[in-house]
Image (cartoon, rainbow, N blue to C red):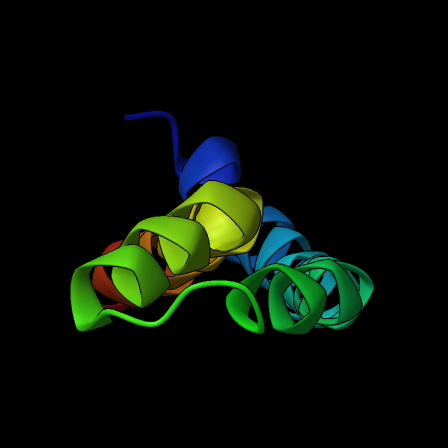
Length: 79
């Protein structure tokens, strides 16, 4: 890997991770009202879990990408 890229990539990944944390929070808050309104009608645990993933999948994906970005930045910066 090019030395300049190896120095710049952890910074880019850290910035991406920071935006990911903010994005994850926004998505979770945005969908929480919809989730709690939908759960009122569901009684079973299976229904609650199904509704949870239905409304929170964008936040879960964003959070996973954020964790990956932060981890990759740390690994690259250690090399």
